[in-house]
Image 1 (spheres, rainbow, N blue to C red):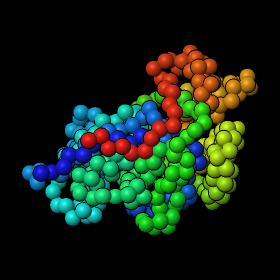
Image 2: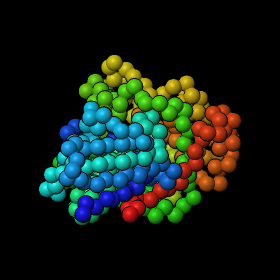
Image 3: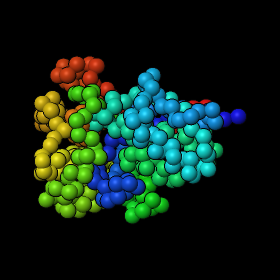
Length: 325
């Protein structure tokens, strides 16, 4: 009998970002990174390998993907088939509780969940390190979504040495992330396109590698010490320096829109009023505001007034991959 396996993985927000690949096929990053897994954004994926199928069947949010749309999933399943010596095709059903391709790391939860469900359905028993390596082959940030809480991705130099590790998995201090969905639509420039453009054309890219090393050295002891200010200042400056790479690439591009800039200004105003909060964002216009739990009501009230209640989502540190069967 063919096993049907369902896995749930949560998305993560990179606090120190990697933004650039040293190997685009294996998805080996130019630098390390560190993230926080979030509880409110996740993907549930069910996989079964079936000898009766004549091709992989992939459905996302109730919609069957065409062969071309499912290419990345098919290629990923080929990796699982290679590792497991399975030859049959698979039926993949995924429900994504994240706005897709809008800078909320939907690919992270999607490929972490797919890695978990597909490997188990194929009969593999992978530890979390091996699962993190496998997830990385679908999406770089997925290597971190295998774990909960604060997660570090060791860049490594090859397939075996590049994987995520839990830094502080059980987060025991009152922090939250207020996510602002400022544009839920598919972004025009994918993360992969943007990264490669920055690596190839930004004159400031060499400095970025040193920035990441310095930021990792600053943020890790700050997390352990519950030093909210240092964590916040580090994640905000890291995000802005990453986005400076997009503006300094050729041709220049930006993931910001007018609401992004407005939300940034609001965060600065709130800080000036004594509410400690800091912003970050990945490849998309949607801002994530790092804050302390006690300040969530004031932040949500302000952002609800500015952007509407449906576009303000409060998240907390979330768990690692879970199997729902």
